Length: 564
Image 1 (cartoon, rainbow, N blue to C red):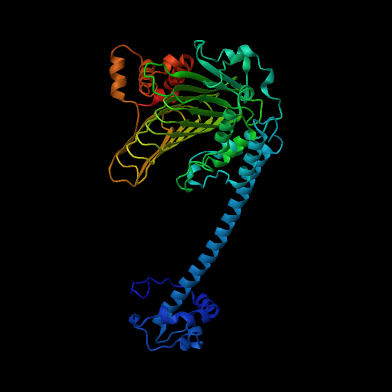
Image 2 (spheres, helix red, strand yellow; image 1 turned 60 degrees about the vertical axis):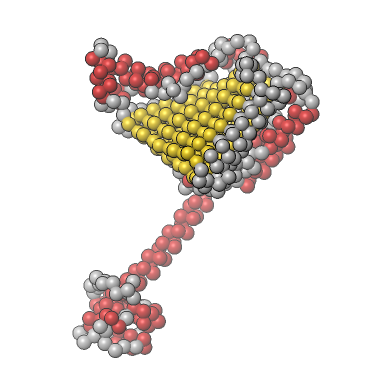
């Protein structure tokens, strides 16, 4: 900067300090004075040796060169300060690196502690469990400095005291009628798989298995069939998100590889839905409906739900996946992985309903591989758990594929509800639509980070993404990060986000028609997510009733009523 002729304001330093500084840095100044004191400063004739000799050490007294000497010494002070600052910065960087290393080591130890006594014990398949343990050692543990986990409270989700494995026995002694009371009253033709703390409850389930037909069942039922289906399921289970499939750079990743490896090491049973291909589409046939319910009692180590949905050509499936707690004191961690594979022309409606106790913790990774002319619709409903996160990765790998993601997050108290999504267009003429709605009251927080990625080959892509949020108190928070990454030039893409409060004029209008403030706010909150909840009341009435109950609780909160 001195070479450019910039003016510099030199600070006055006491003479003893100048002398000490000059003595201490004499050699450094002598080596660099040609750059520090260019001729345009008006300095008398000088040489490097002269500037590094006694005249510099005697600069504390008056002389004809006192002006430029003060400038030189000021520069020396500046250089010394910069050097000291760099040394402090380097030391600080080393301390920060050491702190990060300690934290990383501690977090890796947390993951190791989860599998030290449990890995391979009653595993779905010992070879898969061993592969999960091996992957666990290779993958990086989630950290707040990582972009994927920047806004998630990892202490509350994973590393806090409540996340340690419980020594209490599993919920084998749970009464069947208590679990049955949580289930939907669906017709007999609806297939159902019920898991309690990761173990299939055959008495409460309606499995289906036939040679060459649809299969809906768990580990025990799967082993009664032929080798071909078992091999296919194990092949699908082997590949983990962001370790084997949906790989991406660290800045774009969902950060789910380590958690998926933990699930691989621990899961005891798996909900397997496999539908063989059809010769031609049957437009009049109703979709095959399957309910998969995961119940946690809070009495076990991390629960590891696992789902494989393998849909053949022209098949139609409606999967209702529900996560619920048996009691209000459930603090267990539920760490799930769901993989969906759609063949040509198939259609899947996937409802993921997270309605656990508000003391529980939940994280799940959903991956969907969409083939040619296939359609995948994902609906996420978050109302429970103290902290919950869903990672959804959808790959449109076949021409003409479609996907739709609808999400409703309703958070109150100190909840943190999170949805991270990635929709990857890698084939031409595909369409995607994403609509997301947040409601946050009291001290709660809702997070949405949605990425749409369009490759150069994905011409004629049509994609839209929209997020709307309601803040119901002054302390509530919503973090919204929609993004588009487009490399193709023949596309129609849009994204947007809006955050607001309830319209005071609308509340007043309803009050003028005879409704009290509480009722008016309740009606408005119930109406807000109805487009993303469409059809849920018919397929899962109990789950829909729980959503309505949660929305009414948000409307009745004191802070929500005090808001304008």
